[in-house]
Length: 234
Length: 349
View 1 (cartoon, helix red, strand yellow):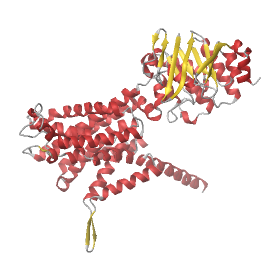
View 2: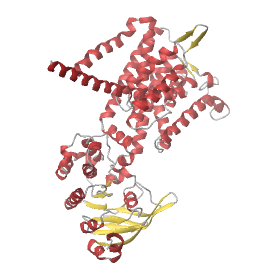
View 3: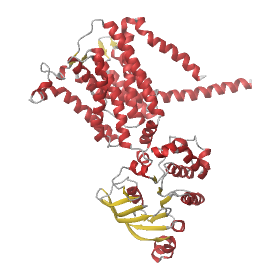
View 4: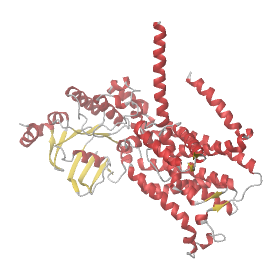
């Protein structure tokens, strides 16, 4: 479904990604794992057109998307839930969700999608006319995911959805992500909690200093000595 | 309650504004003041679409005002009916917005604002020297009529109509209509999909991109719409005063006025720019004509209005970023609290 081939990305003189390749098939949950500054976020931003590539190519359902504007990529069916949620704090929950359904195809089915999102996150419906800035951290994350879903994506990209949440909420959010996946949305996410990430996903990629150093199924990586040493402290 | 209150105040005010030309108060002084107020409300509202809704602060809007004015004068002097030049003026201003908006709107925040200052000054200087430039070019010479296109620093003059009273009254109502049109456009934008996209850009541009808002196109469209309305305003101004020169219509103070009015009134709102424009015109009018008599020295306060705006801007940004509307809101809260307290006191007694 998504094919990232040998991409290089630089911010000015600083190169952030070196020859990164990864593939996502339909209905998978893929996680990117790696320490701070290893290029996880940059990889996701490159996919959704927020940073330009210096070389390489990205294909989504066989179409090249690496030269497209961010809004065109959303129209093709990739939704990006950015790091730190990036909601509009001065707008209500409803308005934030409506902006999620900004593209034409999503706009036509907005009502149904919204009902689906409320079924996933009943809390959002309770707070529908509240300003997004007044929600708790967990609710804001739910809203950010809900906003992403309103564009009716085939692929949902989540940049650290568990960032800054209480452990109990992390479980809740990750479970919901699995639920969304079972309902037919392919997921690509970054997760700092390696144990959880590995058990949740179909496959993982491990990034280090802008390069992919390992990949495989969750079970494979959990058994891998290097992963144990570097990320699990075992 | 508040709705009927609005009707009770709004109705008579509107009726008064409509009747002003017939009352002939103070020798037409009020009518001229009304004309200017409507014109500035239109521009303030237009600027607010880009600067308030989309959050792109432009210090270059005088370019649209000036282009609108010059388009009308140049075309009218070549025999085209003045009324027909109004939409042309708007469109030329709009296209000029596209021309400089495309590169400038790639800049963010204060960098965009700085770029627009440059655009404004460059345009003014170009209009000042355009005739000389054309004179020295054999291909373009044909555009000059009696050696004049923009008239350089002297500017251009339009012929005065025979019945100036009726003419001025027609323009009074015309610009009143234009103001309502601008407010209608602003209201439609604010409550529509386009406005939602602009608000998203204003609050977080990266987030707007991730939900699929074509940010570049939206910002340019907002600029063009804004420019169109300001261009028409410039055209109408030129027809009303019969004389324009680069300093007046392209000058930096004009751009500043368009920034100040919405900020004073309440940026990003529908009514704020209206309040700001009324305030601006009244202050300008009062101070421009005031004289301070200190016995031996007579001080004209005509340049003092800039000082007033400067001070006001500092105060607004420091204490009430929502402008006059914010003050009104605070007053409401304070008033309701007082009312509740006195109600509680009477219940106790």
